[in-house]
Image 1: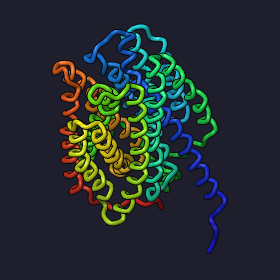
Image 2: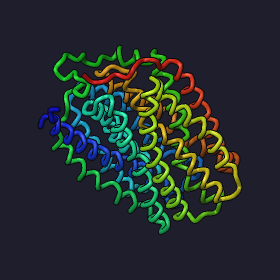
Image 3: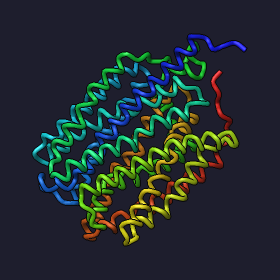
Length: 418
């Protein structure tokens, strides 16, 4: 039996190094995003706004994020991604740190828009880069590892923010979490950007250039719509849980704010880390049995998560609520990798960045852009945050239904690289 060529070994090593760097940047992406949730209470007190405006910083971030995502997706399918992503990381890092200098809600909202712009550039291009260095048989594993950074980075954000929140100092939290991204961003300069389609054996073949009519045509694709609208419902719930989680534990169950942020962050890290890794493994096993393996995992996860999350937000006992939230987050994170893997199987190689961008635009415009504000508005009008979060299990049920329908339309075999 012949041994692998040095070129193949070198490419494999480079692929894993690239994945590690991109995953590290993705961790900082979510750290920067969720640290604000942990320091929400002292921020409200310092800047003087109530629950009806408490979701606006998250919405301002999403405004910059999803509105620019299609633009960056289009660029990512036509131009080198390395330098675009480098610029995006530097913009979001500087803007996060600048948030600690805001002295009014209006200033904070304007700054958070730029955080969203920078993160949109990275998030739309990072997964497509990974898809070009890992063949279809390993792509789901690689993407699952990339997305492990979501719960890990979010948890670090909650933990750091909780530490500062316990001292009433939200400004230093934003300053300290924003600056590390500038250093890690420079590592992108040393990476080799792969030709589009390299992992699929298409590097030496003519690949069409992404065209706007093709991108718009994805909106008529049945599988794309079922996947993305189900993903939107899941994102709606996950975004609201992430924004209001520590405050919910503080108000409804009486946990000290710093402790609530730390506990919520630890649950997010533990449940999200294990679930994302396990979800990737289980999806790979199911995919060997049926072409709809990824979607089966997605649908079953939401079916189980719906009643558990309802229990978690309605039970009166703090310990049981924490257990319910932890288990619920586990099932919310379980399909993280398979969602992206399924998306890339639906679209052609030359539309991967654009499809990710269009997906990003839709899940955030109709998902976590509005969900923190919706929950906050219901809370403010009913004077009860528990009533506000009750909308979340209902939305998870919608996700479960859409992904269950998607199963019957997923019949194509797995595309294996030549």
